Length: 272
Ligand code: NAP
Image 1 (cartoon, rainbow, N blue to C red):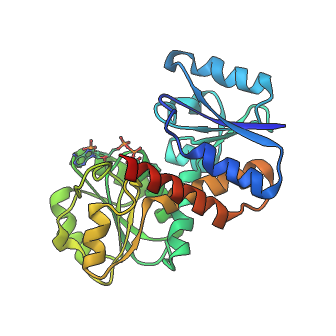
Image 2: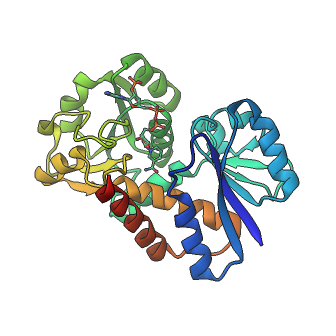
Image 3: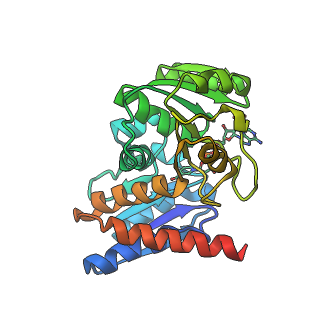
């Protein structure tokens, strides 16, 4: 049996086990996906132990995405982003990669949005913004970053090759852009948006990294202005698809994974 999993702290409420185990079932693979809540002081030992135990692949979440770079061999993409969210143990040392970037790219493409065409505004300058920004710049887009802490936007923009701003700049930036992305945590389990409803227009594609709820205030405001909207579950789905395909070498059953993910997110949200 192949064993995959997620290390982080906390990991108890992760949707990843359901996402991956649906794929194993549909593809008839003898595999399991486990959550491993890891002591932040013992990350090195956890990775060594996982390799020794014959674990085939791990996803990595908060608070280890950056620290784990020191104990695996990061891919070029992960090194440029500065974070690893999946480990492939088929190499020695294990390889660390970042499938959040691929997840965001495939989420956009699925909705007919060419990530390399035109101008994008990313709101936020944390880990999600870094992965999405790297993908957009690599694809050829012009990228503006706006963040509550403007200095973090400037620093990320200078790393990526874009421009950095405070949130006050979003109305002007969005007016001349094709794509507007929320990569902050604003809107997660709350009815709030990081930007005013007046920034949206019908020529925008609007994507949210937040996926609880699926219909965030940010997306509702975008939809009301006639923008194309892409919820955070699409990026989440496709980062899982990319990890599954990398680990197993099998084409992912995307529709079944999408259905399982959405059912889980919707039932969790209706219970909250
Ligand atoms: P992070 O590194 O902690 O960054 C958080 C960002 O949110 C920062 O830019 C921060 O601004 C901003 N922010 C927080 N509170 C704010 C507020 N009240 N007003 C304005 N801005 C605020 O987090 P992350 O890892 O990038 O994750 C961001 C979100 O993306 C989370 O909801 C996460 O669940 C989601 N995510 C989704 C996926 C997916 O596959 N869909 C993947 C990764 C992450 P400051 O710099 O000013 O603090």
